[in-house]
Length: 348
Image 1 (cartoon, helix red, strand yellow):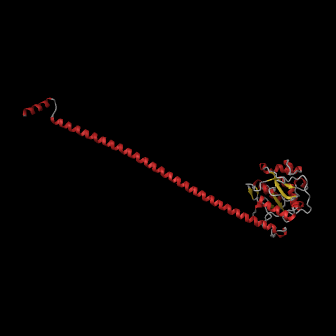
Image 2: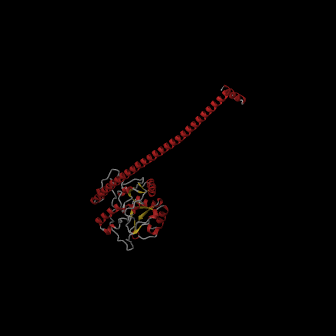
Image 3: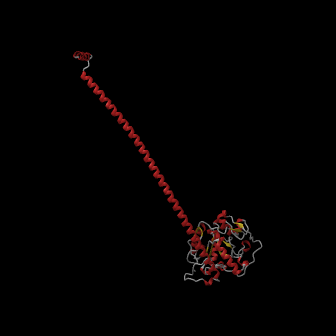
């Protein structure tokens, strides 16, 4: 037995291997294998960690997206609710405004029916009256008979003509037409307060302000009386005039509903303290009336129903009724002694 061991040991020595070195080599291999296994485990752990991180990141992004979507949906619902409430509030406000307007119109109508003449208006120390809706024009002392060529058909006015639109006994506006650019001109009025009749279309209002300023510089005092008038208001006035004076007389100075130039927003009735701010033919013989006739065209206005023009307009003389058409047309109409109908080559 000892001989065999000795031979083995000798064989190993002859092969250059020490038994101790063989054991050390074995231990090294074992350690390397353990390190390799550890590295593989770390790699696996890292790989697992990256996957988990990616999954967690994806989950976080999905959660964030879901929260954003939920917030957006909630905001949309809140906006829809707010819009619905705003619409309901507007509808309620419109209804209330309509009811108040109807009540005001009814009140105005009753006041007009009870009124018999201008002497019932209370005068103030400054010569102005309390706010009165659409004072009545004086009834002509000697009504003229309308000429046979007056056309009382109902043709729609051409609103595309703008400041040159013709509205008369032939051409009418929709009863609910109302310009969108109405403003209150910065001029002196014959009454206090602001009413429907205090308004005028903006371009015409600016020119009227310049005209009033020029008149004042010339020592002429003018007062604005009545501008824009709705179709509904014209209906009330016309019916009252017919009841007061009869249809034949009323048709000579009052327009049928929808046929009033006042509804265009391009007209203002103006007067002066010298005639009690009244709408009377006597204005034409005053210093103020003559100033209007001589100077209105410089600011784009014409005396729409001039003296002796009834057969060409269908209305009696109204020195107070000025109509804005623009400086160029107004100058030509005045210089040629024309009516607006003749200038525009249309009927009346």
